[in-house]
Length: 480
Image (tube, rainbow, N blue to C red; front, side):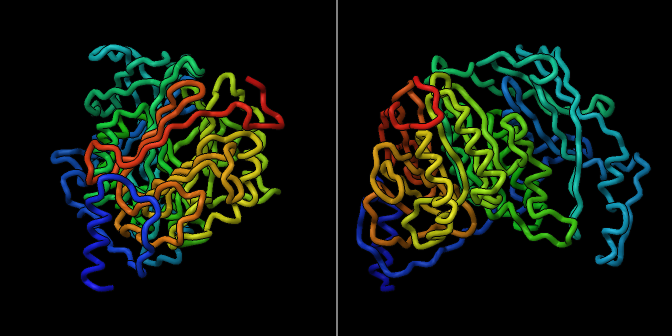
């Protein structure tokens, strides 16, 4: 590639004021990796003076109707006052025949993870006891991974309320600072408008930090994260640095997740599950939606039914995921949740050279279900660029097909995907830049989507207004 053409490309990508439609297909432009922030970066390292039982990496996620799960991490193996015995195993291949060297000791401590909470700052009059777990790999021992659910046993949390809380262990008398989040409103169209933040492929680079700052400035009510979180790729300390980097946001706003290919991670033995970190650190409400797996689930929020599919779980017509999806869609009542949104990692519609066609088999199998039940939006990541489709079904423009939003541009270390095929009719806008999406569900029939490109700050780089057609659904749906 000539220097002149390279400069033109850089100018188009970095300085355009609006997103690009169409354009000239340039010769192949490889990804330019962005270094991950160092582990001792101020946002990634443990706070100075943090002790063994100091909570960190705090996250809030929905846990079923009127409930949330709050998660956090501590490092009790560093507490020298305990009688912990750290086992030294010299033969890696013999490791699984023994108790894990640190994790079992953590479990033996019988910690008491607790959330103290209330509806008034400084008056945390309620208390919820949680549980904890941990895991060990060949080269890594996690801390204690705590989870506590609010709104399950004592009755649902007040819809739309601000909940103040702190996490810790009363026996250790070590607590986080007082934090707060806003509970979801009542389920139903009267709770609209509702704003969803959309992120994928975040990683932990300078671009990741920009994306977090920008989405925070747009004040979403909650966030859909469509996979590829930490880019730890088997180096598990990077799960902890990522957890610290996002904690300022995830502790004060509900985030919901589905897994990407970087959550698979290499299994070092037959006893190590592929999704070890994701399955152990994150607790999604799959059982509440009748799912058998945390890799796919659904939840309701305001006037929307949101489905998180698993691109890396079995999805054939005879699979548990397919049967669950069909049953989940069949039960949706559009009078209560007029909007139906699907999230997954690998996109079904993608005109970029990278990852082209990887979601095709899943699309052919599951797309008819989404069309049949009138799904409105499908949000994906995986491709490190932005792309918005027109309403499409089976690769043809169709007003009853979903709009596909690819937001795999969160900021990961691998770099952007610059190369596209000739733009298909269904592709409305595409651009290889970092950013995030905002989906405003305005009322029962109107929505607005905007894409914010990082280099533009608060400005909108692409937008689309959507009017939902209530007739775009067929068998099994309860009529409006």
